[in-house]
Image (cartoon, rainbow, N blue to C red):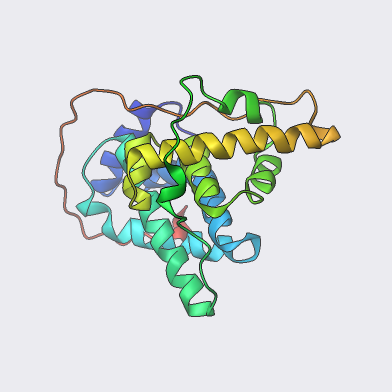
Length: 220
């Protein structure tokens, strides 16, 4: 798996040049957390199929992407979310996503609750607890803490204001801390997932690369 954002940025750009090995490295780096996000939208049974559809679109549209690792994660999350919503509509189920932003007018505390809420939990355990949150909070927590998006990128993915996403994530993490307190098996295993990311101010040079090689998930 790629060790840091610089390596992921380099791998994405190499994949845009048609480097299949680089594309597989991007997949291995991003897929586990992206799959976790999809699970919060469609459930375990359909998550793999929806994630596969998302990666096929990511491979197909990669030439049109421009940006660094942070922007790539956000772009991939938007594609995965759209595929999940399409899947929900096809199944005839009403998506339990979004939430009323009028409920998100509170301001998050300056100290981040993520460390206190889910440190030392396995990802599967954390996601099972996240699934018990209201959907808007679950999406905000997964995008910010699991996928690793900053508030701006998460807001673009969800079509919300950054402040609303920060507040939803904060409330979700606070509720997770309460759930952990109710679960004896989770006592003493807080803070497994990283704190919410804030945007880093850095210049990014964009490049437009065109190639014709087809990429499919079979190569990953």
